[in-house]
Length: 462
Ligand SMILES: [Ca+2]
Image 1 (cartoon, rainbow, N blue to C red):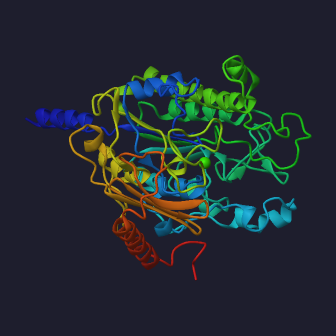
Image 2: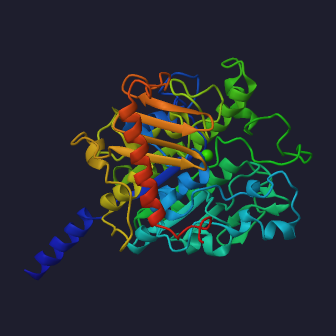
Image 3: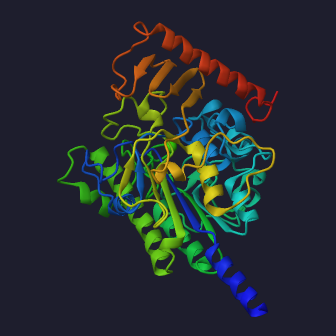
């Protein structure tokens, strides 16, 4: 009897073994920019494989049209305006172009601001649930020690704390941007960032695969253009007008396929990233864990150019669909269908509740999350419960309610019916004044709710 109980418990715990999670974010990859979509000659066989073996979403939104607040929402499951990280953590607020001394840099926003330490991250929750947690890549949540991954729920960190790097030199104002754990490092200076992140991601998987469930958070900086100041006098540093930095062997894959050299360089960075993702997929496969591992992939905001975001309007930093709607893939063999494409209304706010549900981890106590578990939607079992979404970037505002999209921004505005006008070409605000009015009212109600969640953030903690 006793043996039977022990055996039963062993089998139950085996069945209940939570899945590994690999959460990958790319940087400024446009809505159409996957090879499998086919509108540009981009080479992404591994992401195409991931899509063929999982679900790809075509109406998936991020919470902000640029990096930092978008990524903060992924980690917290909350609107940027609720978690307090609703602008970039960057020195453009005090003069991005200024060549700071190391001492000036140390007290500048880029060094002193970050994701409020009162916020609970998905790393915190999965670590608490027994996961080995690792972050490799572009942390972008602040560089002061209290903001770094090891203090935010991660056992392991290799990557850059700040918003952007030169892919080869990994430094800003002469200060190294890369960290191993809590310490800045120059050990990989001169090596292309994606190659370094690939190595460290494989190292993390190798250490934990099969021993305990792992959570690899892999927020990449590719295929963002290089954040290099100056004109690049050092070997390996970005040259003026170069666009995205990418190893020549990957750029060469595009010569003869595309005319535009900037698109070729973007493609090179994208394909190099795709190979790194493929290496991570293979490592999981080799460990026999493909069935037990959830892969999630999406871009942190819309494309910044590089051939455009057609059929969407606008690009990164705008409130148009091209700034906010991004490619998204989730693969979990046997748990979500293979090769399915869904047009259900989903957002990055759904990631935290989805991962909590998939892993059985507890939701943080007393914390309002802004999304829902999207697994039933991805399985095709139900319609998305999401009916609305709101965005604010400085004075620019937008809302989506069902298929209506409302925009008020420095780059234009109007009311659009996304069911017939995905490209936001026909402003219906004069024809449908009542709808426009109700969209504004919905936005204002959301804004009031967000204001009531203050004071939290580093920008309006007054
Ligand atoms: Ca970005």
